[in-house]
Structures are given as C-alpha cells and as structure tokens.
Length: 301
Image (cartoon, rainbow, N blue to C red; front, side):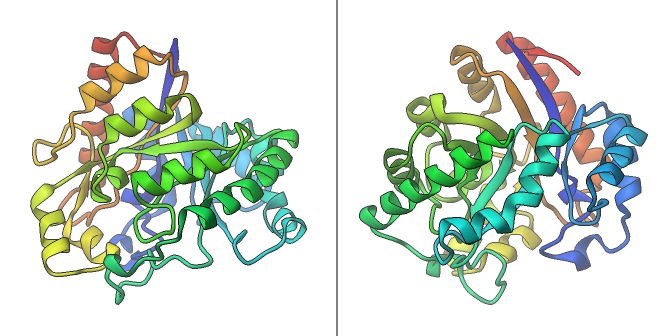
C-alpha cells in the first residue's frame, strides 16, 4: 500500500490570521516544502487562480496538488446553487489530478471569528445533520462524476465538529461522501482520534495530521476562548513535536491495518515567530517518514 506526504502552506501563509505570517511569501513556502521533500501541497488562496497558471506554478516547484479547502454553503443553498458555486474548483482539481476537494460547511460556522468562543459553535440535532448529509451526498456524487469527489472536513467551531456529529453525518450520507480525517481537530473537540478512525476508516479518503499542545487546549477551555485564540496561542503543532500529545505511531499503524492509500498531509497552523515554518515542517516530514516506515506504509513521491 502506498501513501504520499503532503503539506498545507498554512504554517507560512495563514489566511485566517494573516498578521501572523505577513513576512512569508507563497513562493518561499513552496520552495521550502519542495526542499523538505513533500510530494504535494494543498491549494492556498495566494496561488494562481486559473487552472493552467496553477499547473505551471506547481510544476515549477515539482509538487502535486493534494487537495484544498472549499467553503461550503449547502445549508443555505439549494443543490443547483451550490453546484454552480463550487463547479470551477471541482473542475480545476479534477484537471490537476487532485485527490479531493476539502469541503466544510461555512454558512453557520464561528471558526473564523476570533471574538466568539468555540463553545458557542452551532450544535445541530441528529435529524438536522442527517438531512444535511443526504443533501450533501447528492453534491458529492455530482462532484465525483466530474472527476473529483468531496472529502468532508469536520472542524472546530463548525456544525460538524465532534465524534457525535461525524457519526450523524456519516450515517445520513451515502458512500459518495468521504471523510477528511483530522487528528488535531478531533482531539481539540474531545474525540478519540483512534476510535473515529476505527469506526469510519472505510469512509476516510484524505488525512490531515497535526498535534495538539494539551496545556494550550486546557487554557482555551478554561478561559472559554475562540478557535483562533487557540491557534494564535499555539494549540497546534506538527507530528514529532515533543510538546504534542497525540500518538501518531498508533494512527499510522491503524492506517496500515485498514489498507489506507492516499495522502497524509501536515497541516499545523502556528505563529512562525514561535515555530519557524521550515524547521517545524521538516520535523513533521521526518517524523512521518519514520513512523510510516515502521508501520509498513510505503511512501511514494
């Protein structure tokens, strides 16, 4: 079984807290990612928007497109409206061979509002999420038919955040909708990342790995802070950071056991003044190579 190692450029180019990374260019981030050895990058907002321009940009650095964020609004849009809204991205990702569009519902999220505590995120009922899942299945099938399916990103501050929300979404949707599995967001939400992987591993098509600094998470909870307060304070880090609390060896062992084949993407937004992007991204890469090899996951470029 083969996996590829990718990275999101969010450590160098944070779109939610741009002041943290104002000193870093996308070009410098691409050079760093390629030099470290990553095979792919997820699309950032500051990359070329047109397909051929993006293709040339990726080729310049010798990396593939391994996904990218899509702000969904299916809770407030009908299916045709949402299809029109995301068609360009789906078609572009299909043309560039990306494994998926990373889709998350943003019509009612508080994840980008630094003034709103994460405890006040929208919490829907089982019936509401299952109905959304049924509607989302139609969108996912449409996208897959165009050549690039949707991987749903559970996210702090969003309506699909914890293990219960994921259960309801998966139960209410068809296999056309796959799951983006994010270790850091699961731990932040109070979920057991291994339990979620054991339960829904057959629906996982894309993996994000980031670690959590437990003392920072404890502070976010005790002080009732926002998601972005946590990010700015350093709640996330890369695999391999001794300050982190997640056992990534256990996770790659599970990925091996379930015959996972696809991308494992480092996505750990941090303050670069405290966590230099190149050094931490290299740490994450080297740790992933070590534990994937130990688990028996073959890494391909």
